Image: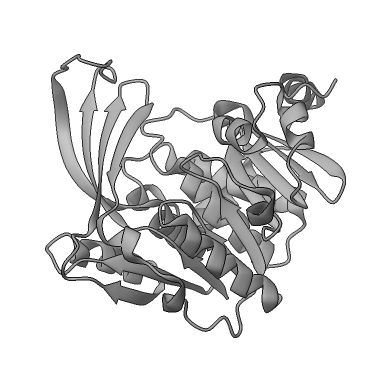
Length: 310
């Protein structure tokens, strides 16, 4: 069983020709709301795409924004451990998606910020605890420390990016970051190879957008090229990757196989609107894997070069 402890937000999404620069107003279109939040997105990916028994600890307000989030999670098969805070609104995110599928996101945490160490449910029967940084850091640390003490694998998606102390990183078994987040955690602006060398976590997975991903795992470096797709909306793609990766690891898949599964899952998510609404079914991921040959040696070599590992 996987426990996800993290954020749940209602996403307010508008499509525009481009993401506005500071001080700029752009005329948008196609406004919609979607269930989101890094924690909730990852829980849905773990359950729906990954097919893993998944629980989620989340904070919600007592308002009209909470029921769509609960319904989305439950419909994906996620068992909820809800901390209700009527005095704080449900978290929200305001997202602009450009015509080239890039996005800019502003989050109002609301009830997410009210999760406390004492809210952690039992970890009995739990193989992995999946955390992010959209809830208070001291709460994340307390949950990770409790999991480590009970022999539960701690997976941290260090997003949004922030500096993390050596003491915090010592609680983490698997760190998942994108390029920018890796640079912040490593406190270094060099190559991916240089940044990886500065992060003292047993396994570090770095997502590289349209290029793919790289992992340093048990002293070995693994490369996974991205699947070829025509992106529509990249919102939630990284979360789909995280949830799918942890689900694959909980099924005892080797890291290389888990990376490929997570990459396929997130590729499908990029072809659909929204965060949780874009997460594929496990059968769709398996079909894409079956229809796609392994990456060529040339593409893997290009990925290796990009990471500064020539």
